[in-house]
Length: 316
Image (cartoon, rainbow, N blue to C red; front, top):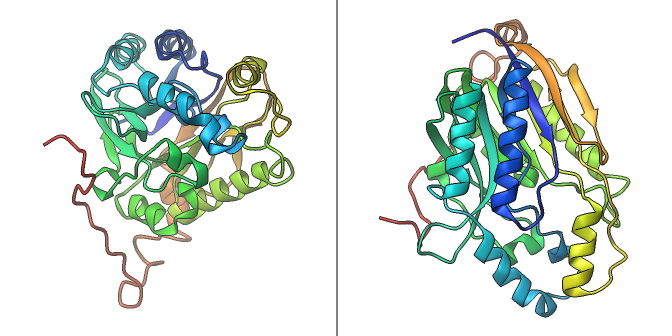
């Protein structure tokens, strides 16, 4: 396992509501990343098929048909879209963390899921978002502790959370105690929404820096900007709205001692936010604060984690 490696946050927008075309777009960018020497690439939250921004912008009953359609275009872990992404990862030699709206084959309940794919294209595992936020509950069910894991990959021990899961301190601690070296943080664009324009990117930056230091882990934060295509889609399907604009996102790579190594990037320009990281630097930070060693107090504070599968619609 290398100590020095090049990583990237994918500051990219999907081909909205089209998982097949979005998967094809992802493969192109994975190939670009491989050509640039990247060994680990993190995509935004539910990159396939895109974040359903309308859930916070329109009345619930108006959304019913579109929410059903969103279920329809959500993807299975073993579906064709993920197969082409895995093949692209293998061809480029790039490990990938991919955000998807997951609908298990033969089921209707969907999950906000992060897939972890190694450089040989093998599927390391998946994490389902534990608590969909606010109106996200129209779309996604809750994950459980069985997917709250760090995955041993050819480039290091990788864990991840989506969006405001980062406010769940015990979820972060579970990954820290599982030996996380690289943290994948998957985000939509929040700063383009009314009421969040002045605070969203501040919140993301604060949470990303906090996790880097408290976990002594590198953080790769990947966000997806809002495009004019997305706004036009919502206006066409649901009517005009004045609560969201284009751009946004906060994509960066952060050192465990909190220097920002690449980015932050916000706005419509699509790009790879690339940095070289040295996993050996984690030991330098743990000299000062080791949250699983001398800076823990298990006699006073202890995490209880239930890793059993409790999603009622999981396949046997």
